[in-house]
Structures are given as structure tokens and as C-alpha cells.
Length: 353
Image (cartoon, rainbow, N blue to C red; front, side, top):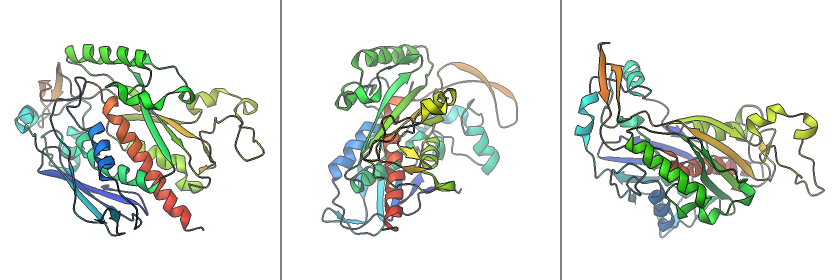
């Protein structure tokens, strides 16, 4: 299986399955002498881990990270950083009913067709549990990017949307609710809706908004390696993501150039920021902001028709522990992938100095 490595200079390779012995990864290209706050890494993991509230999967995993190499006396050595995350709460029997059948809109069918074999226990490699490795690497990348501030939050769940512009958001309130929406009143509505959806044995999607501040001018390469293109790729590589837009996004297509152009101030900043902090594929020093759309989780606790490996129509009902809505736990994953992209381009940009 290809496609297990992300990045160019700052690279992450991951391994492991949802119900295997462990997940893990290797971070290569991290500069030496970076002070690493291991507690900060674990805090990021705690934001992503299952079982953290009543509105997420109830699988109980501590998700404690054990570093094997690349960090000595609290600092990076410049050598590959190896780490593992033990799986401690597998219930593989919850998936025995799909051993020979395919969940609708899941990766089950395409994995079987492509490889001729699949790990049906929680989806194996296709499980979102793989993203735990991304959060570890993203937490390291954040500590490389000391001045850059990356904040993501839930801006919608189903039809419930937070209308507050990100410039008016109090980022400190993001972690005050299990939904991770900084508008407390809207967050309460989202939480109630997710609980209602769960009782119905169904799932619902949502949107995560991400804001990146204090980005230096010059990150990104023109033509094929534009900064927004790599951010888009990184977000679309996350499980259940269906869309990515940055800056004015699709709304910008409705505007005239005279409305959409960001007029310069004398210091090179702009009066507006419909460009989303990126022009010509290169960061311009303004805030980078984007939205990531997540679909409803494919595994639902309702009976649906599907097919088995022989092409027979069979009935299926989901079992096991699944998120009724992924966006609350997706917030740290979005931040992590953004950090990996920026760390990679930060190191690449240093080659020009």
C-alpha cells in the first residue's frame, strides 16, 4: 500500500490499524535543538482521543504517546522521531457481521477490490484512528512554528451554523464545550442535535473552520506546489472530508474584481482579506483561514441494504462504537495537518535564505 508518507522536508510516515497492536509513525526532517513540550503533545492527543464526552465514540483509549527516538534531554536531535500509540480497548468482535459484507459509503468495498484483502476490524487502515499519528506529528510541528498560531473550531453541525465572523471569535472558549464551537449558545444547540441524532441511530456532518495567524510572508511555491493547494490536499486526506475552501471560497465566484481585490496598505498588509492570506500560492502575511466540510459517518445503527463479497443483497445494521458526528474530534486533526504543511514550507523557505 502506497501513500503512507506526507510532506517533503518535514515528513510523516504512519503505520498501524484500528484494531491492531498499536499505531505509530516516524517524523523525519525535524530540525535539531527544538525544545519539545511532551505535555503539550499529550494535550493535543487528549483533544482527539475517543471517549472524551457523551457525543463521541465511547471507545476508551488513553492514547498515550511513547517516543522511541529523536528526542534527547527535551530537545530534538535532528534524527528521525519514532513514536507508538498502543491500542488498549479493541472489540474486534463488534465487526464480525461485516466480515463478508460492505458498509455503504465506507472504504470496505474499494479496499477489497483494490487489494483483494481487507481488515474488517474497525476498517483497519481506513479507520479514522490513523489520524492519532497525525496529531502527534502536528503537535511537534506546532513547536517548530513557535510564532505561528493555529486555531480550529466547529462552525456548523448539520443545519446549525455559527454566524460569528472568525475575527470576533474568542478562541479561548473553543474548549469550553464538548462540541468545540466557541459560540456557547450555538454549541448547546449543536450538542443537543448530535445527541438526538445518536438516539435515532443516525449520524450527521459538519464544518470545521481553521484560522492561522502570524504566518510569515513567502511560504509556498508557485505553479504546482501552491500553499493553498497543499493545504487542500492535507485536509482532503482526512477521513470523511468532502470539501475545502479558503478565503472568499465559492462566495468569491459571485463577486466582481472591483469588490474582491484586497487593496494594499503602505506596509504591505491589505485592507480586506478575501485572498485568505495567500496570493499566487504564497503566503502574504495576512491571516490564512479556511473551512473543511465533513460528511456524516458512514456506519449508522439503522438497517440498510448492501451487498456481500459475492454480490448478494443483504441487510446490515451497524454495531460497535462510532461517532455520531466527527467534527468535535476533527478540530485537532485539522490543526495538525495545517501545522504539518506550514512546517514543511517553512523549512523549504529557509533554503532561499
